[in-house]
Length: 213
Image (cartoon, rainbow, N blue to C red; front, side):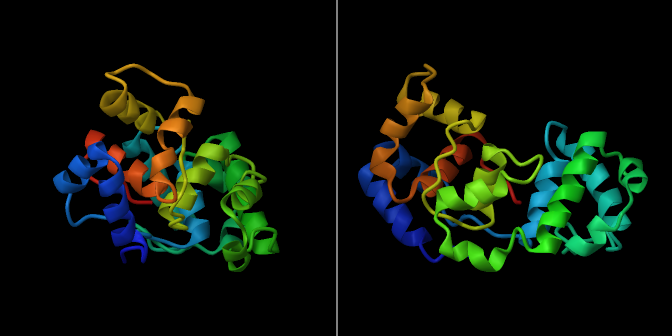
């Protein structure tokens, strides 16, 4: 489903920024979509870190099967308790590195124990939720920010470490010249409180097919 704020955000950004106005017109009728539950979304992000999409898909299918879920669905729902019960050797057999196997076990324990409780997240501001997420091994700030944008549908995230956003800002606003995070924040000030939406349209200028998490 389309986020409730999406249409208002698009109108505001189109009024505020000529670049975004062009991108909105170029990419009509598409928007952010949430695809799975919090645990599964974060587990998929960990599996996909620093490897190709093809390799990540193959490992993900084996991991889903090891968790006791039929792998025919692209976005299954995994139970943290089931993942926590998978022994380390079985995780490694899926094709996961030693470190990623540890990360997935730690993520599962955080959810199963209630240390990460999605029911409480609506009460947390963006920075507080990012802090809670990066407490998990294998989740850095970038992964947390992607989760806030794509799963939590938070409207005002600006992931300054994202290479795609850096490239798009350089291309559209700086004649190809790279910029510092501080410059990115200053440039994005007129996009508040819809910086996630602005980021999403800038990504579309590089790849018109939306990424799904």
